[in-house]
Image 1 (cartoon, helix red, strand yellow):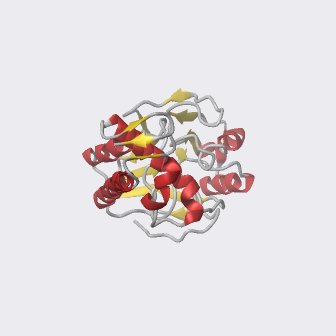
Image 2 (image 1 turned 120 degrees about the vertical axis):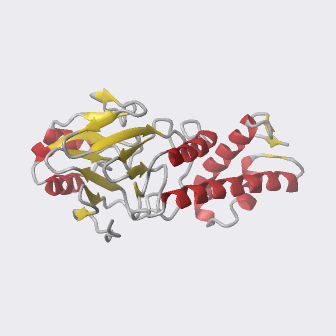
Image 3 (image 1 turned 60 degrees about the horizontal axis):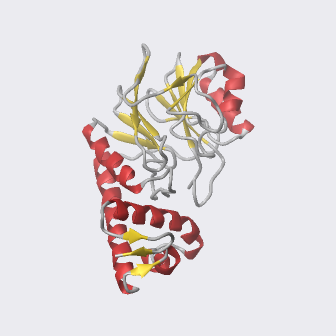
Length: 274
C-alpha cells in the first residue's frame, strides 16, 4: 500500500480498492486534515465525507468520476470534521447515509450495528463498533484488503482527545484491545498517513494511555491526594504544549472517570481524591 502524499482535494490512489481525498481543514486538532475514503469503483462507499465544504464535496465527486457510482455514505462518528458534508453529498448523489446513529442531524437511512456488512461484487466492508472517542464511533474493515478505516479511534502521528460523557476512556481502551481480534494489515486513519503495523500501533496507544494514567495518580499523590483537574493538569501533561492544555483537560477528566470506575479514586463534584 502506497504512502501517498497528503494533498488537499486531490484524489490519491491508496490501493486497488481505496481512493483518498484530503479535506482542507488542517488544525492542531485535525492534523493535516480529514481523510475521506472512497471504496470500490462501480459501486462506491464514501467513508467520512468531512466538514461542510462544497469544494471538498466537489473533489469527492470528481474522484468518483460519476455521482451515480456513489451508492452509500458512511460516517465513523458525528464530529464536525467528519460528518457535516453528508448533506452536501446526498444532494448530489441521493446516496443513503449509513451510520451507528444520526450524525450532525442527518437521519440515517440505515442504522449500522456491530458486525453489519456492506457487500458488493467488488468488496465487503464490516462495521465494528468502537466506542471511546465517541459513543457512536464505528470503524470499517475492508475485508478484501484487511484494511481498517479507523476514523478518530486511531490517528496517525497523535493521540485522540477523549471528551466525556460521549468520550469514555475505559471503553476506548477496551475497543482498542478488541481490534486485535480481527485480521488487520493496514490502518487508514481519519487523519494522517496509512499505518503499516496495526498491532504495534494499538499496543503503543494503550501503553501511552496507561502511562498517562500513572501520571494522573502520581500527580494526585504529589498534591496530597486531593485536587481538582486544574491543580494536576500541568504535571500530568507536562509534555504537551500549554496551548493544548484546554483540550487535554477533557482527556484528564476521562482518565479520572475511568479510575473512579476502577475503584482507584473517588470524587465529590469537581474534586478528585485517592
